[in-house]
Every structure is written in C-alpha cells, then in structure tokens.
Image 1: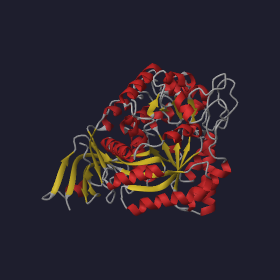
Image 2: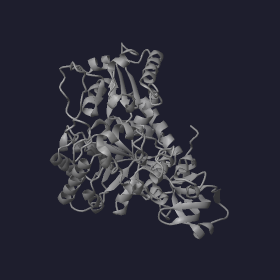
Image 3: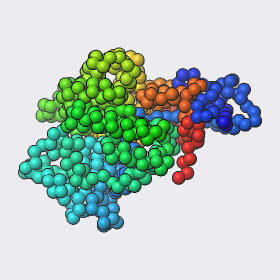
Image 4: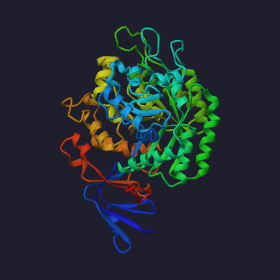
Length: 534
C-alpha cells in the first residue's frame, strides 16, 4: 500500500492548521509530526504550495439538470428577452430534426414580475414546441405549440400545486409556475435519451471534482434518474460520490414509500460505494420569486392578500415524513418561507415521537426565512441547515423580485446563517446548481462578506449574519460530511482521504471577496487524485 505524504500548509475543521498529512489506502493515516515521521522509501511526497483542505461537499444540487443545459440552446448567458429568442431560433435551425426545443435556464428578471409571453417564442419557433426552464427551475416559459400539445387553453383549470398566468382574455400567457403547471408540458416532452443523460452526468461530476467537490447530494431523483446513475456507475463515469434524494410526490402521499424503498434497494444491491440513495426529498413550499414560498404573513406586494403555497397540508406532511423516517430514510425538506420551515419542523417532531430516537440528521434546505421562535427547535431536533451561500447577496433577483415581495423587514431576516450557528444548528453548504454556481470558493466569498462580487453594499448586506472563514469552510467540509453520514470532512486519522489543494492560502487573502479568485489545483477522492483531463 502506497503512502502519500502532503508536506506544507493544511487546515482541518477539527484540528486547525497542520503542516503535514499522510494518506494510505484511501484514508487519512496521520497528521503533523506523526505524518512527517513516515518520510522514507515507498512514500510519495507532495509539496503543498497553497493550502490542503478536506474536500468540499455540496449538500444540495441537481447535477443532471445542470449538465443537460448544454444539450439545448444556450440561454443562461443571454441578458435580454431578444437574446434568448435569437438563441432559441439559432438552435432550432441547427437541429431541424429535434421534435422539441428544450432549454434552461433563463433570468426571470428579464420580464416584468418574471412573466414571459408565448408569442415572443412563437416568433422564433412557430412550428415546434419550445419549453425553457427558469433559473430557479420553479417556472417555465413555453411557446404556443407547447401549450397546445399540453392541452393548456383558456378553459384549463388552475392545476394542483401550480399556476397558469393568463392574459386579460383568459388565454394562457406562456409562463407556467411551479411543477403542477410545468409538468403539464414536461410530461409531454419526456426525458432525454439515457445515453445523453449519462453523458451529462459524467460531465457534471467531472466538473464538480474540478471544483474540489467529492460528494454531492442530488436533491431530486426520480426513477429515470436512478437509471441514469446506475448506468453511469456501471460504465465508470462517476467522478465524485453521490447520494440520491428520492422525490416524494405530494400528489401520491405515504403509499409511495414502498416504491422509494425499492429504488433504494436497487442502488444498494448495485454496490457502488460512490452511489447511495438513502434520502427522501420533500417540498414544503415554492419560492419567493413566484410568491409561492409559504409565509407566516401575506406577501408585501400591493393588493396581495395571500401568503404563498404549502405543497403538503401540515397533517399530510407529518404523515409522509413519519412514513419515510420509519423506513430508515433521511428526510430532506425544501423550506423557503418561515411557515414552510415551521410546518417542516412540526413534521420532524411528529416522526421523532412516532418512531423513537435515532441519529436522523434531517435536512432543512435553503433556510431563507426561519422565524426566531423556530430556530432553537432546529438545534433540538438535530436538523442540518443546508444553505446556499451565494443567495445571501443583493443581486438582481434579490432586488427586483425578492425584496418587493417580502418587504424590508422580512428581507433583512433572510439567510440567518450566523444566528443559526450561534444556536448550535449544524450548517452545511450547497449550491442548488444549476440555480447558482457550484463553485465553493464563490460561495465562501459571499458567506464571509454578504456582498456581490462588486463589493455591494459596503460592509455587507445584513452584516450580522456574515460567517468567519473557519465557519464557512466548516459548512462546506465537516458540515456536508455530517449531512452525508460520511467519515470525511476533517483530516483526522481514519477519515476518508477526500482532499482538495488550493493554489493559495484563503486565510491570507486581503478581503473575503478575494476568496472567489482562488483556484483548485488538485482533488483526491478516497486517496486517489481525480483525473480531470477528460
């Protein structure tokens, strides 16, 4: 067994700064003086010029969604409606045999209130259906042919768990909000072919590894996705470890647990240590930008009297959480609004009472708004607060869509990361990729500054919620490892040797914004350097 000895600066959430780390047989063997004593024949030495860290994890992402964006028109980079329409027209002309034009993801701030008209796309593609996903993946923009294929017209009732915005004459506008509406079109479109999905997954996991990420929580996996991951695993095309969060459909209730157990068993029988399916994903609400996040008080928009949408009624959520918990799953609940967070915590408490104590590590994802009365409950229940630090800044989405819907007071209470950590809540960081960049170094910059890349506002937005660099790094390393039930995230002997080497020391940067300028120069998964040349 070859021993690799890293000599130079290292940092670990549990041990602080170190000067040497030894790795053997996929695990950390020794650190500090004990590691240096191993120097000699048969030991491969690696000089560390920057900083060696436990590898990053991503506690909430959608790798297949992200990489499949490359298969359609490149609309993410377009900064105007006209630019998107032109790109859709270009791609459609270059792919005349494709029956559908499918793309992602557009910037919702490019149209008033995030509402886009089908007729704008009709001008580009009048003869084939077009469906484009919004940047938050909670909405879609479609053309008239797609509406016709889905049977959506003026007589179509509002779907369960979705909304079809309309023109004054009652006809559908062309924007579909939340999956109850979006699925009306996507179900007609169908998934990409398996070989395309596998190729996308390989690109996605290679990209994550290049960013120093060796474990990711795929936060929405259905049966087709399980097939994709199993095929990629069989072909040796996974470049980081993945845990699948199997999606619990609110339209099916607790009876679906048997199906979820069967999917988990398929992954277990497959036996790849890099692939697990031990989690169930549930949505408690939508998103603020669509006014579908569930709030304790109504939205602040003029004339608005509603407080958003609960995906599950509280009793139903408690029942399904209790059922999946009894089946041994970890629960992972999307909760954006403060009412959604409260209902989710009530459901977790119900599962704890019904099923008895165990090490659950339930995840509350996004934690955009959590009422102060509920924050200590998270610590008491052992909840992992998964946050996407890139969202904690005054970017255009925040300024143009989020703040007007929440008002100033609630806007200032968003992403209470330091407050939760002070109460003993375990933080893990993620990206929700492709909703935002999966680069942990960009996330660190925002977590520690609460500023945009241009340094706005001076001193940081809601500066009391800024994290120290140590706390932010811990959320990306030990925090995600804790969420994943993995012996990783630190450099303690016995941990998995998942490592990342940075080109410079983040503890030496002049400003937190400079963290985003650092680069990963090497990633090790279970002690083996990941080949990023493909």
